[in-house]
Length: 212
View (cartoon, rainbow, N blue to C red):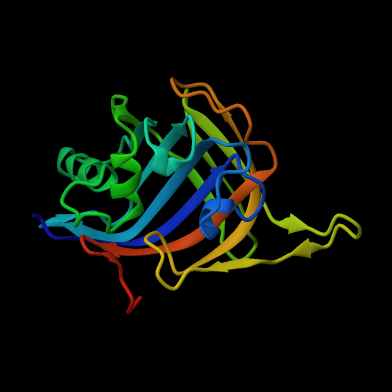
């Protein structure tokens, strides 16, 4: 197994109501799951391959809950990545060189037997972590706009976080809402003002790094 480690950020949007029942061991709001996710890797490595400054994104769709499987997924890697970086990112993002069940990538990949061809395109990702706002754009695949939660009466921004001490994706996540439109092979049709979260990624082959 090739050792790897990454540090960066994740911007995710799924079709569930704000908070996402999956985070609390419940079934998805509408009985199935659709998601678009973007990743910024500030620093990291895969063996001796430097992954600092790389970006990737993924689109997922499951006919039921994630754990019921039979999902379809597609990985998109920023076209600026070198061949070595492309190979490394694809392996990490599809759960390879990872201990069983250690990361969300391992689980999502295991639950997605239908893997579409990996794409290499320019990824435009903008993020204001504290402001819970940003965007992720992949030409001819998807576009997501993130915004903070707001009080439905006053319109004032509302801040909420999810804390998962034993999570396989993160320890803390800032909750937001987002809308995703797709133009690629995987159609997402219900992600309008739905659950979104921003989280720091600190991870290696064995899962989330506690020290981070």
